[in-house]
Length: 74
Image (cartoon, rainbow, N blue to C red; front, top):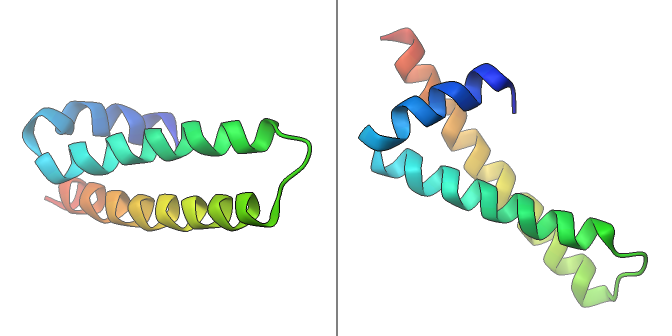
């Protein structure tokens, strides 16, 4: 995520509960993915879980982008 987006998110988080929840989830997913990416080997279950986390993270990011777009346009 671009630095200007992060700065806008941090500015808006105290005023937008949904954005706060999405941002917290985004950070949590990033942390989990980082742990998976440090592994050399994945079990099939690990790979499935990693892919699911990636999907959730991307869906959340799309919603975050949608919220930011509204603030930029208003």
